[in-house]
Amino acid sequence: MIVTASPAKFDSFVKELGLQVPKDSGLPDFQGPTPEQMQQLVNVAEKYNYKFILE
Image (tube, rainbow, N blue to C red; front, side):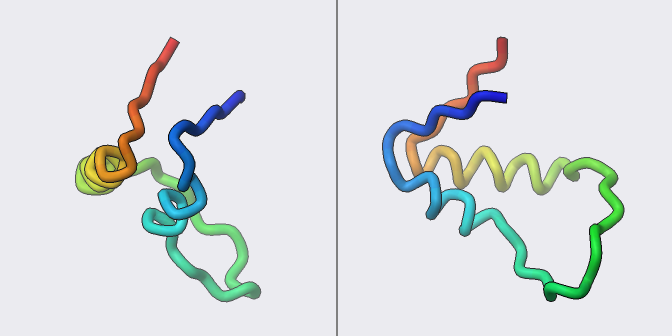
């Protein structure tokens, strides 16, 4: 995967969406994002003027 982030502030984008977990918690069970989480991603992306291009 190649990720190009423009404009800057990608670190702030990731921090806003991320969740803190304890170091010793292990890997979570991944079940995919919920519709609410996808909407949050879109909302935060708009705040940082990011757009998703899928090819």
